[in-house]
Length: 142
Image 1 (cartoon, rainbow, N blue to C red):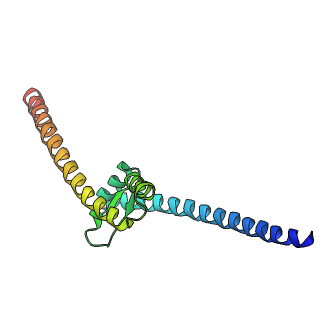
Image 2: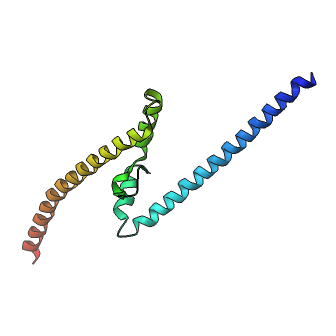
Image 3: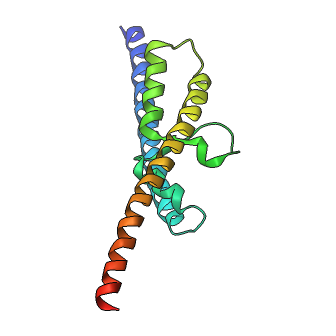
């Protein structure tokens, strides 16, 4: 009977170590999320990275894929990255994720271009409205 207990004891110890390791990884992930949020707040206060910080906030987070050239196009919304990862694991586990990363980079570029056109259109519309209001105020009070 003692021979039967020893393997169980070893398995229980390994399971406890795995739980401890998992807890340490979760704590590290939470620390990294906190650090990332703090760094994004710091970046938002700079001229060079304020647009990136706003994009990350608007996206609910951002995940970096690829190499550091073309930095802005290499950051994709975190939820898009998670969706692509889950899709790949569920439907195409034999396909390397790097193929999905390349697709996401290309889609991200399209989304950025679309957003830039959208912002330009809205800016043009409201700049005219604001200019008209300014002209009316100036005619009444100048």
